[in-house]
Amino acid sequence: MPMQTDVEDATLVHISVKKEDGDWAVRVFPSRPGDTIAFYNTKPAKKSPERPHKVVWVSHGLVNKMKLLVTEKGLSGLFKGFELTAGAGKDIHTDSPTGAGTWRYKIEFWEDPTANPVAQVTIDPDVIVHNDP
Image (cartoon, rainbow, N blue to C red; front, side, top):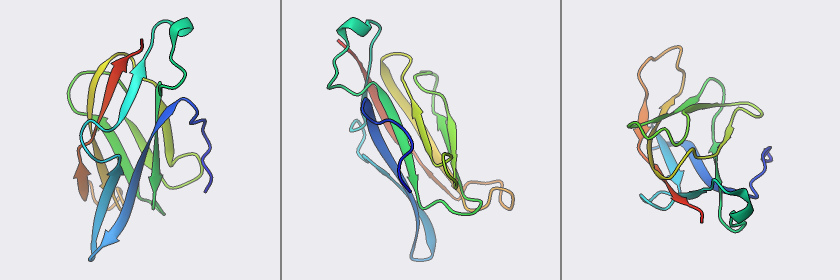
């Protein structure tokens, strides 16, 4: 499915869901702590065009009732939590940071959230947000 959002000013985060040896696995790329970077700017006239000022999360492999829930760990408030599900426009999310710092978050996966209230897989990535300039 083609992307349905503008990524010109964005860092792209891929989240994949797939079966590995009979169990569900959730992977994220960039995957190392500190590799996902965005910039925060309060002066549009001085904004650096080569620096990403948004983050776009794109899911891969979601079908049927599958759901990814992305929530903040801590109180930085740099981004809002969101949900990704199967279906056009529901498998991608774009947001801009509200300041500089580190946004630690968790991604929880359900194959069928109506059948199981407990997430089957949880991972904990982060986004580093720097001031620009």
